Length: 389
Figure 1 (cartoon, rainbow, N blue to C red):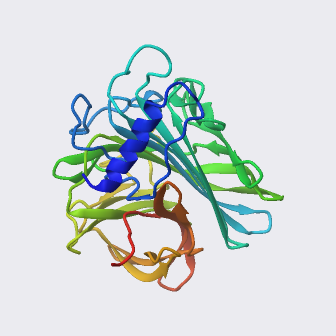
Figure 2: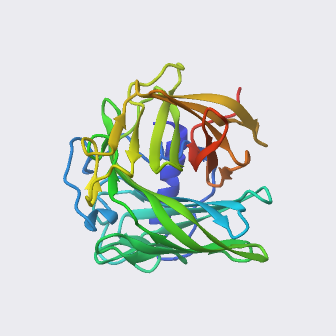
C-alpha cells in the first residue's frame, strides 16, 4: 500500500476519532489516485466483505450503503446547456470510507464511517472550473446515505434525495456559499446498467468491485455562478461502486470515460495504467444502445442492447497533454477505437483539475467522429498522474 493511501486513511481515522464535534476536520493533504488504491481498500481487510462473485442486485436497497465493504461512492456527472446554448458540466460525488465493518460502539457517532463530498462546475463560456469539498464523520444528521421508497445521500448541507420506489426521481442541492451552487432535478429515464460481468467489475487477479450505472438521466434546474443564475438542462450519468479490494502494485492510476452519443448510445470505458507501459488485461468497458434495450428494469451483459468491451474490443490512445501549475501533464485529448469506429475525445476546457484534498482531473469532454463533427458529450476522469521527475 503506497503512502498516498496511508495519508487518506489517516484522514479517515482523524474524522472517526475526533470526538463528537461535528465541525472536526482532517488535515488537508494532496493525494493522487482517486477511485484507485486510495478508495479501493487497503491490505488489512479482515472482517470486510469482498466482491468475489456475481450477485443479485436488489433495488432500491442497492442504491443505499454497503457498510461491510470498505469503500463506496455515489458519482453523478452531468452535461448541460443553458437557453443560449452555452455549455456546463457538473460533478457531484459522495465517497464513503469505513474504518471497521461494524459500528465502533453505541450511539450515532459510532458508525465507523467517514464521508468525503466533492462538487465541481465547469462553465465553458467563461473558461472557469469551480470546485469545493466537504468532510464529515458518518452521523444521521451530518453525513450518510439511506434508501427505501425515499433515497437520501447527504453530507452537511449537500443533498441528493428523492423518490426511489421504482425509477429514481431526485433533487441535487449543493453549494459553496458566495461562490457557486447547483439545484437540479435528476430523473431516471432508462434501466439500471450492470457493469462488467453482470455487475462484477474485475480490475485484477484479486481485485473487483460491484458496479452499476444509470446513463442518460434527464436533468434540469439552475446553476449559481458567482453573481449569475442560469437555467440549464441536459443529461446525467450516475455511477455506483463498492469494494474492499486493493489494486495491484503494478498500476499507477486509471483513465475513465462516460460518453453520451447523439445516436442514443452510451459508452463507459477505462484503462488501467501500468508502470511498465504495457496494456493491462483488465481494461474493459460497456456499450449501451438505448434504442435496442428491452423493457427491463435492470440490464447487463447478455441482454439485448448491451455489449461488454474487453481489452481487445477497444483502445484509448492519448493525443495531447495539458501541463498544470504543478507541472503535471494530463492527457486531455484521446483517440477511442472501437470495432470499426473511431472517435476523438477532447476536453472542452483543459483546466478541469480537481486540486483539493485529493488531486485528479475530472471534466467535460466532447466526442468527435471521423469527419470532425460532434457525436456527443461526456465526462473524463484521470487519476494517479504526478509531476515528471
